Image 1 (cartoon, rainbow, N blue to C red):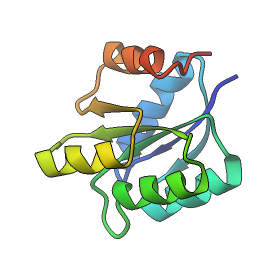
Image 2 (cartoon, rainbow, N blue to C red; image 1 turned 135 degrees about the horizontal axis):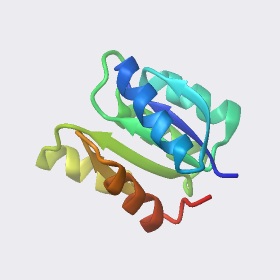
Image 3 (spheres, rainbow, N blue to C red; image 1 turned 90 degrees about the horizontal axis):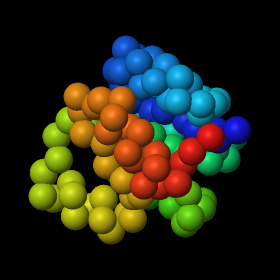
Length: 121
């Protein structure tokens, strides 16, 4: 079974996204609400995939992705964001995220990203 963590500062988004992933056959083994929680969850669980929001108070998704890449350069990381500026897009390219899901997300969009990143159960 494919394991993953979901990190977003919005509790409802985290729940809905996790529910969709579970329905698609993935096992959500951790949920977090900040970049630092994402890093802790990654270290604790070593999931097959990370789904992370970029804009969060305190420690953001960019911080988490950078730290996760230091732990495991081959980690499958999917950024989930409502607002993607050119600057953010360039940062994500530098951090080598596997894919980007735009909010509001759809089940179809999530399914496409899972196939593209070969994150299938």
